[in-house]
Image (cartoon, rainbow, N blue to C red):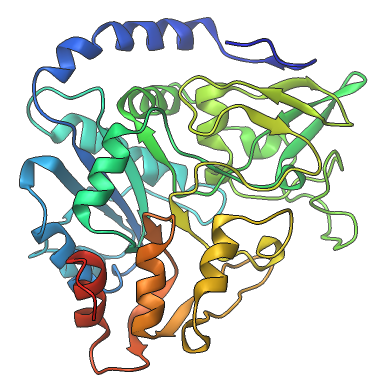
Length: 365
C-alpha cells in the first residue's frame, strides 16, 4: 500500500491476518463454480415493483445468483412467498440507529445457507425495497463479478464524521447504505459484527447530538456529526477510522480492495468510490463537479424528472416515460431508487411491461 500523506490508517492485525488467509484460499474457491451475485434486499412491508424483479431473476441462470430479503413486516414475507427472493429470519432493527443488524443477518444467511463452495469473485449487493435494476442481469453479473474490490459510494467529506485528535482529527468515512461487498469483506463484516466491533459508533462519534444548524453542519472538520450507523459501520469495521487527519484536508489514502481507491481527504472533494445505485440527494446533485448522478438527471426528459427530496430524504419517482427508462438503461448505474410501487408510465399503459422490455430484456420500445 502506498504511503499516504500525513494520515495513519487504523487496520487491526487480526483483520490483516483474516484477509491474507482468505486470499490464500481464493484459487481453491475459484475452481468450485462460477462467480455468483447475491442480491440482498432490505424491506419493510413489501418490495416495490416485484413483478419487474421477478422478470429480472427469471432472465438469469439460477447458479449465477441468489436473492434474499430481510422483511420488517409479515406482509413482506407473504408477498415474497412465490417469488425468486427468499425471506430470511427477521431480527430487530431501528431506523438510523441500527439497520446494520438486518444487513449482517442477510450476509450471514447468504454465506451460511447457500450449499457448496464459494467463489472468491462472488459479490454481495445490498438493494433497497424501492430500487429497480438499471441494467439486464447479464450486464450486472458481468460487471460485478469482474470488478476487483468492494463498492462504496462515498459522500463528499463534509458529510464524514470527525473528532478532535490532538492537533488533528479522527475521521470516519460516510457512504451510501447500498454497498456491494466482495466475499472477503462479507465474511469479515459478519465476524466483526459478531465481535461487537464499533457497535458503539453512534455514541463514540457523538452522532446527531447537537441541534441542527444549516450554516454549521456537514462542513469538513466541523466537529458536528450527523448520519446513521449503516452509513458508517461497514467502512469503519472493514478499514478502520482515519487517524491524525489534518483539518486542512488535501490528503489521500489507498484502501485495499476498495473500488475507486485512493480516497481523497479534501474539503473540496465530491463523490468518490463506486456508486452502483443512483440516489437523488438534492444538496449534492449539481455541485462539487460533474458526476454520474448529475449526468443521469440531465439526460431525463421533463416527464421523467423525479421529485427532488430534501436534506434528510432522497428524491423519488412516481412517473416516468419510456425515454426516461432508456436514459436509466444508458446511465452508469446498476440500480436506481427510489420508485414507488406501480408508478405511472407517462406515454403508455404498463410501467412494468415497458421497464421489463427496455431494462430487463434490453429491447428498445
